[in-house]
Length: 351
Image (cartoon, rainbow, N blue to C red; front, side, top):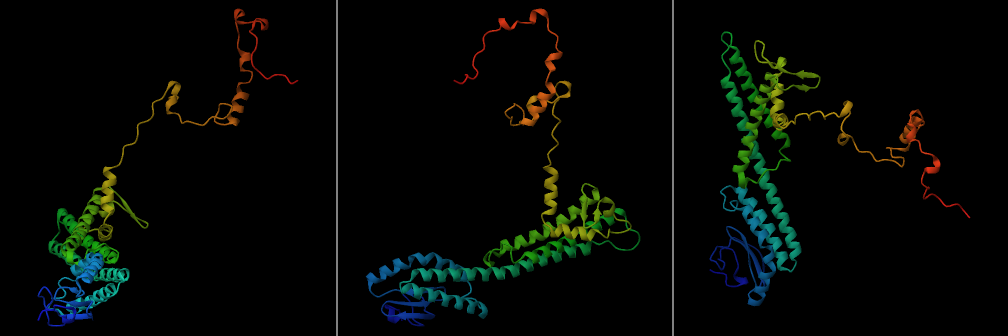
């Protein structure tokens, strides 16, 4: 039986599109009815065509939010798991409540309710995604540790130095993977994770975090063994001598590898700092008598006396006072006061 009016909307009937109605949340004949099909929550608008047109226009602004909610609930309504089907029904009831409020001419409150439903859906999807993220990260870390255990050389007889070094690097990889997983587990609540609808991206990110942690740990151990860098943890200085094996793997190696895997930015920052270090600038050229050129000297704001400050000017004047008296002048250089031109300027005498 098809629902040709608001009164005809009931469970087991079909709507205007021929889709079976599975639940009816609200009915206010002949103005509207809120019902559910197998894939969404819908509205049967008023029987009057003019009122129906106005209702559709009023609720059109809620269509984007309703579309996002339907996308987030997608798959739960038709799931064979009762837990997921029940979860979809719970959110559908909240959406139906919001639509009832909207049909009663309160669009703003309806939008607020729908926004809250969307946020709760996103958080629930992310909660499940975090769990799956940790599963992928733990599986990746276990895989690296398993590879380390398989690669451990036999203990029969003395091991060559190369085998001992290789065993140390494998241990660094396994310990670094554990450190990376520890870092993920501590920051999982604050880490930016997509919903479980994008689980492939989440899985790739978790896998790369573990792999990067293992590689960073191996590289950090190799850098310390080569003597290119040194570290200090607490009061202990770690350098090449402490990292080189002496009859076995160094005892400090697991700590260094764990730190390298846990601090994912440590090794990249060390490498960037090494490659981006700028050479020291060449010394400034010297002028006559070892004095730097004038252009290279810093600029100072001069005081009234022409020096950086008045005190410096007074000291310079005191030092040079009477310095002209020591000069010897030729007879023809001496000019009589009467032959000097008349003075100009000055301050007029008071009347």
